Length: 441
Image (tube, rainbow, N blue to C red; front, side, top):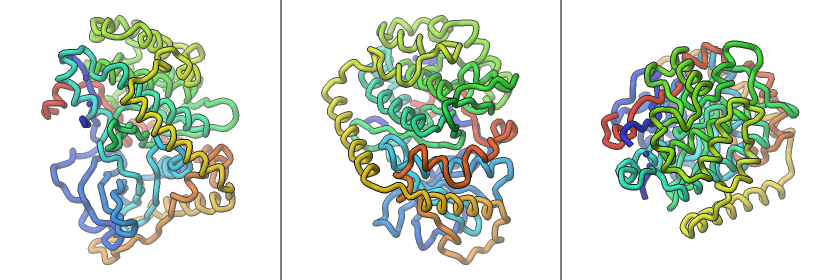
C-alpha cells in the first residue's frame, strides 16, 4: 500500500525547535532502558523531545514508540507534559482510532512515554505519495478514500469531545496510519489538548499550528473572549479534509514562513476573515475538482462565527459524510466498527475503579515532578527505569467521571504563551508536496 496531493500544493513540515535529525542517529548513549527495551530506530523529533522505535523485551518484543524527554523538565512545559500523559492514559484504550498509551517511565536521564506504534507513519506522507496520481485525476485522494479516513477521524474527535477533551492540534502530522490495507487511522499527540468541565468548552490559550487554527483561536491572543475548543477542532478537521483532497492548505502564511511569528498568524487570519476559502488565489482553480456535496460541507465548516459553524454531530449527519463507501472501504470500515464495538463492550463489563485511577494520577504527578529534578551525570549504570507506571489497564476505563478525578487536569496551569510559541513546534504551511514526494524537502 502507499504510505499519500498540484505543484503549488503544500504539506506541513515541522519547524524544528532544535537541530534537525540526522539519518541513522542513535538515541543518547544510555537512557536506562537496556534491560527492558531494545532500540530500533529514530522516528522523529519535536519541540519537547524525541520519539524512538523500540522492541519491548517484556512483551514478546512488541514494537512500541517511546517519547523521550530530557531531564530536568523545563518548568514552562511541566504541567503540559503531565496533562498530556494523563489525557492519553484516560483516552488511549477507549477508541481504536486513538493511539494507546502504555507506560510512563522515569530513568536517570529522561522521562519516557511508551505508546502504541503505528507502522505506516503519518497521513502527511500518505497524501504526499499521491502527488503523481494527482497530476492525472486532479485529486490527491479520491473522495471515497478521503471519506473513509475522514469518518474515522471524526469518530476519534467525537470520542475526545465526549470525554471533555479538545485536541487543539489536529493535523495530518498527528494522524498516524496502521499497516492494515486500507490503513486504520490513529489520532496522536495530545501535547496541546485540554480538558473542560460542565457544558462549555471555553478556552483561552493561544496555541496550535497556524494553517489549521480557526479565526477565533488565532485572535485569542488579542482579548479575553476565549474560544470553544470543540469548534476549534471542527475547523482543523475541515483543513485536514481539504489537504487530503487537494494537497494544499486553504489558508496559508507563504509570505511569513516561520509559524512561530505573529506575522504568520496575522497572514492566515487576514485570509480567513477577508476571503471565502473557495476564492483564495492558490485554491480557487481547484474547487471545481470537488463534488458539490463536499464543497457544501466545507462551506459549513469554514464559518467565521464559531457559534454558526457546523458541529461534529452535524458533520456526521451531512449528506457527503453519509455517502456509502465502495466495497473495499466499506468492508474495512465494518472491521473497524466491530473492533470498536468489542472495545466498548469490554469497558462496559469492567467496574470503574476511581480509587485506582486516583492513585495512578497521583503517581504520575509525582513522576513528572521527579523528572523536573536534575539528571544523573554520565556515565549511567542503571539498565532499568527508576520508576514505571502502567497506563494500560486503567486507560480503557476512561469516561467523564475518571477524567474528573485524581489531580484535576483543569486545575493544572495551561501552557503559557512562551511555551506555546517557543517549545512545542508549530507547523509551517509553506512547502511543496511535490518536493516532499521527490525527497527534496
